[in-house]
Image 1 (cartoon, rainbow, N blue to C red):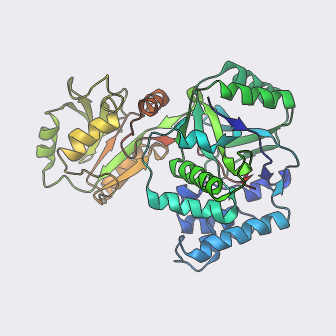
Image 2: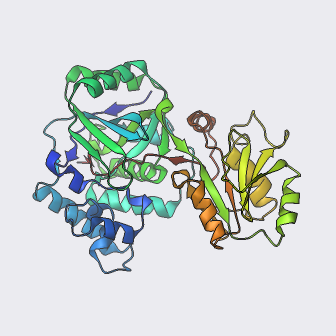
Image 3: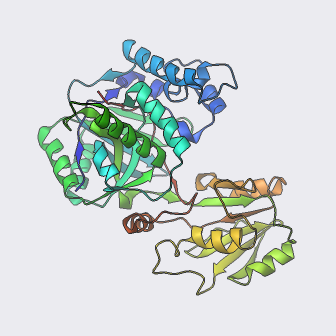
Length: 416
């Protein structure tokens, strides 16, 4: 069963939320954060990307940068830009993209659920990235940014959320300036409603990490570290929990995560297309942008033409939660077998483009001469992710792109 609890959130006053909130730390570079923060001293980037307070070129891993994060977090609280709630609450966070709204519950997730596998992952994590986020959690003694979970659809929780969404004025309601997506936030104070949330989560055998595997690992590992270091540990301490926004699985939008490659491994265009025909039905779709319409169909952009690639029967295993994935099919049969790109995490010959940028971005990067060809994939489904997590297997790299991203700074969870 999944264990969650309410917590005393640290939040900006309503009139300051749009000055404080920001994009997540890992979706933009340091100089982008510097530009977005500008002269706004209340921007959360001063806590989550504090290298912007130092000269250009300062490493985000410089020890002074972590220390500055903690200094700024203290300053934000001292100046009243972030204020801790007097009581414990759950919170509702709604995001609207392209007319579709998804509703998440902000909870304290139990560290032991992560450590014991009830919070399930589908991606590998890198220790260096985990350690970076662990340093950030340690120095602030807080989860500054939430992680992004999915849970199996639940009618009781859905009805509770809709009651707030349709009948209660939100605490925050704003449009993010970068992408135009809408964000709303409610505070749940009613004890019966909080008890209902706790009870309904307790019926769930598992929660699933949708996005934020490194943040999840770091938050849980710091919590477990604090458990070991406290000789008087009881299990009731706040560090036993970390902040997560949990969405019903059916509401989530997963976009395609596409590939661009710098060369064809010494092959001519004709040789490359001929090699593809071994495992794919290849059809020239002309010069208009062509998007994959179904599973096991890919779009190739090469020499100003779009091609449909349909995987032939026998090239994938529908009974294998990994082998059935288009990201696995393309990695095995195109990137590795033909182009000799085996390690997607380290190869300099490949790059990845999130689907929010559209297939026009793939065309632009190839037409510019920066890249030789592009491959567009049909998006992974949330059910596939849950099946993989349940099987204990790990997805190939760069398989999922969730949108919209969670905004940071709406609520923070202190560990003590």
